[in-house]
Amino acid sequence: MKKILSVIAIVGLLAFSGTANAQIKIGYIKIDDVVSLFPETAKIDSVLERYQSDSLNPEYASIVTNYQFNDSLYRDSLHTPKAVRDEIAKKLPTLIYQIQNWQQIVNQALEAKQNEILSPLYRKAYDAIKVVAKEKGYTHVLSKEAFLVAPDGDDMLALVAAKLKLKIPPTAPK
Image 1 (cartoon, rainbow, N blue to C red):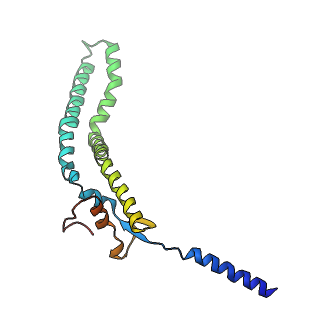
Image 2 (spheres, one colour; image 1 turned 30 degrees about the vertical axis):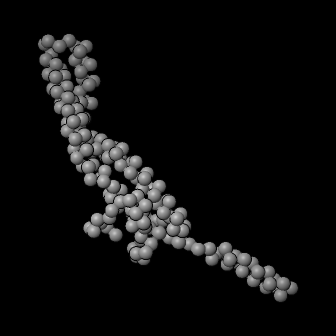
């Protein structure tokens, strides 16, 4: 009986070890490094500056002007009817909040605009990473930040850049 159990255990171990020896190949890449190689990313600062000067700054000026106008009407109790003053009293807190928190509102708007601009580039980079991983036999691709030490040969930046026909500048992170 012990012989049969031993044989079954050995056969089970051999069968399991055959599947356990499947080739695992792990690559790594920092997707932000790939996106930074696209020519479009060089222009993003100027696009965001233009967005801020053409859209956000005039909006702020409009909010301030609106606040000043409503505040002067509200304060002029002799010439402004009570019903109008009550309506203005409802608007003023919102305007004050927007003015006081404008920098945070601007930062959120700029971040949303940046995400809108960069999302197609991230999609291209992600798709290229998947294609390169499949072509080169990588079973797992992790973010570069996940490793403290990793072999240079498994850094996929050069492979993905070549797939996307992007040039890696000599100062680019490796």
